[in-house]
Amino acid sequence: MTTIEAAAYIGKSASWLNKTRMSGTGPVYLKIGGGVRYDMTDLDAFLAGKRRTAIYDFANDNTRAALSAA
Image 1 (spheres, rainbow, N blue to C red):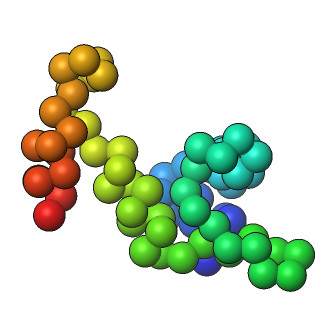
Image 2 (spheres, rainbow, N blue to C red; image 1 turned 180 degrees about the vertical axis):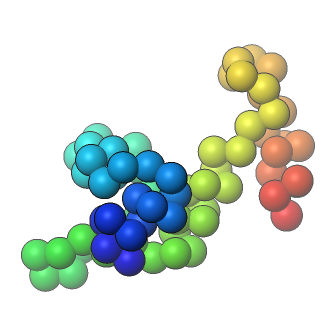
Image 3 (spheres, rainbow, N blue to C red; image 1 turned 60 degrees about the horizontal axis):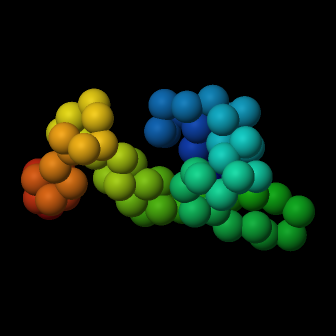
């Protein structure tokens, strides 16, 4: 997927994806020639890693969030 397509898929802006590519905090991407592409399985994995059970980290049950994703 292109950056614009990937952004629409995960519900973010293309600008957000561009910024997270620079900081290394976004989804995994492919650099092919001069272009950037995203694989749908990488985007799904990124989204699955963002599952939460609480607002605050100390109360977040990552194990339960991961199990509900399976």
